[in-house]
Length: 349
Ligand code: NAD
Ligand code: WQD
Image 1: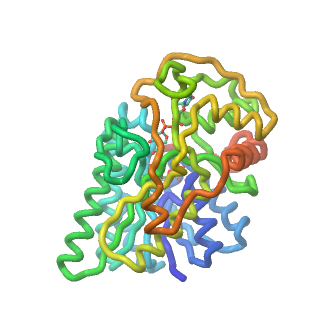
Image 2: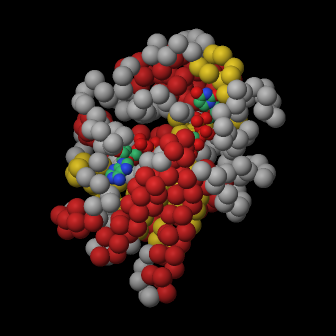
């Protein structure tokens, strides 16, 4: 088994991945500055698994902290989640996104080189594809991001390609997997960890669960005049536990391979906004009132993955159903109407 550094491990996907890593017998080290999460999530990961997480509180941009971390807790691999991820915010604050997402990764890779840590799994995003020319989207589709967030992810992928190529050319091992997530939703079946967006959720699923739990009056459906089956936006939603398990498989791939590869993590199935609302109401028995409004600027009509490469290289495919996504997300929201907030104040960003 390995010792893995999870940057951003207190976040939505990172916390679910730490559970799967610990369950698979790995040792876990977590680095998080808690700009968009709570230490409570790390506590709950330990409670769910009965296994310890070694937590370092701080910023992935802090080189001296990273050097100290790698000295105190030598790791075999890194899973790099730490980033800012709100598309709309990235348009308003591009420098903050490039500084955190791109510069932060450069500092991490420099510290990894100094500590001779040669394997990394990177959180990329389907956003790197922009508006797809054809569906489903395979990994050889052109990268055409159209917002600073998506650009930051595509830039980091290029950095990782070059980082691997330079190391291999110098006869040093290096392996990097960029996992391009589609739309993760849902929560751990215990209901103890889940998605806890700060402020008003920009994503569909947490908005639905907040309407269902009474925190919001109704869902605004961003357009029903899209060229889709029912006119509402279509996306590839996958269960966050499936996504987390894909990272454990990617770690195994890194041990056996060198170089860079980008891999989609999605179900290969498109679900519309109204289909998600109907699935949630069926799974939970809770009504989700909604109102159709204008399209959201920057939205695309439809996007879903060709997941064949993940199956071929990682032996991974999504297994959870839409009902399980809805049911688990509702269980989390019901048990935590205000997310982790009630447990501990959230440090400022
Ligand atoms: P999240 O905000 O819940 O988790 C990110 C974590 O990183 C948070 O705990 C935050 O405090 C931490 N963090 C941010 N900047 C940091 C820094 N400079 N130093 C240390 N910690 C820092 O987000 P998430 O949904 O779990 O996403 C995790 C990763 O997956 C991100 O890189 C995101 O871009 C990517 N991703 C997310 C989605 C999605 O829909 N949630 C889709 C595709 C890709
Ligand atoms: C899904 C569908 C909306 C909210 C975003 C980021 C992407 C990635 C995942 C980080 C769309 C509709 C939404 C609402 C709605 N994050 N919608 N009312 O836009 O596919 O992707 O999250 O990597 O980078 O762009 O996800 O959940 O925002 O929207 O009608 O209140 O739901 O129009 O069709 P999206 P989303």
